[in-house]
Length: 240
Image (cartoon, rainbow, N blue to C red; front, top):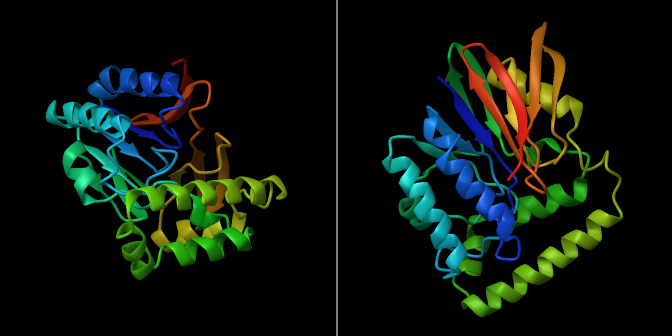
């Protein structure tokens, strides 16, 4: 009995080794799980479900094989793939979740999210996030021709890299009080998220009781996952 969590794979055509590692993960560890949760940034960028990039269809087919084998797969949007929609979800067999979700796993209530909403010290990013999550703006963007969307996405990624290069690591990490507030609001003692690329298990106190915040790592040179079992919560890394 195990439920698996992954995030921040940033799959892209230019990184075939990461894609191969993910596909192998689906055939091995994930195939034996009770469920798989992907907590955002599965892809480096997403400009619409109509993007014909072969990588997207390859990933969708692999996820569909997993779900058809009896392992449900759930997805929370990240800051890179927040436009991933119902069409890709149907193709892949994934179920889309809201940006925050509380799960009951083997007797534990666990809050899951991508994690970017916890980085409240990064005022510039939060303002940008609020803007691009406006439904009317997303509808307008998705109505543009695909080649224009590609150009806009490329410019946005370049701008994001330039902006982040001048920010301190601490500003781009989670705000401790935001973490406590989120967990207290949802009445949980466990939180699993990604986004920061700083994998760790943090002990803290929430609602006057011991609690844990578990951060997933990005798939740069190795895989990262969290395994929740009746015995506990484990963060681990593995080679592609």
